[in-house]
Length: 302
Image (cartoon, rainbow, N blue to C red; front, side, top):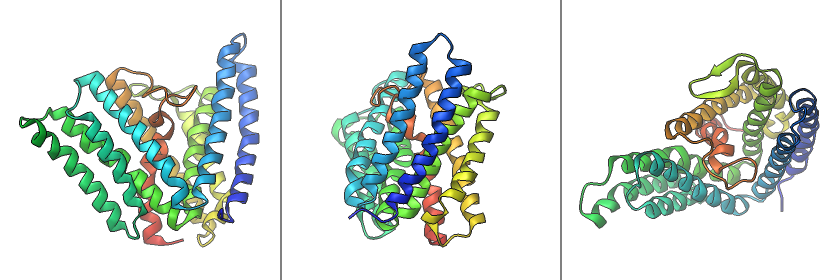
């Protein structure tokens, strides 16, 4: 049975949708005159984002069994995108299929009863990815492949395993994390395009602005108030503080992903998600924020 918190969480998505519609209309009025195709792409991204939020929360509301296919798909395509970027910039890593398989299957450590399962699965994936190419080829593995294996395990496999573990043990905090991170990602981009004048980090991401980042963090604070019922044991000030903290981590995660793409000379990680790009283009903020949020929940409780 779905978690009882699913329905009020979906109502919160409905409220965010209304604000998103207003922003989309304003973008059309002030920034898309005469460019119908670009305006339609904006609406496509917005509607797809809402659909993703509903689908992921619905899957997570039935526990680990529901979220496991989602986590495996994100891991598989995420690893393919990351290794594709590495191959494009530095050359093909040794045994990329092995890195993808190990990094994807290690996410299943999140199904274990303790955090030790997550640690064990992630460690095993890293050891396999680093050592097996040496055994198979019996020659030094390209350094960029070994570094990519380490990055992928920390940047992608570990957060997804922790996300799976969190969804299975506490749907409320998972939904809180997911909606805050996705909310920051969407609203910061929209307010940045609507109000943005001052570039935040032009050498990393020329389209991000201070105005968008600040508005996104303010929206996170509002989301923290609106979603306090998902973490009912937390006082309001703590829910708001954690929400803003997740927003800051989401910003850093977005900048990190932009840095990787800038280094590789590409605009998007992939084309898996229509009108958005790759898995890492859409979930970079959530992935980066997950380990810190998970650690806080485990230390503080719900």
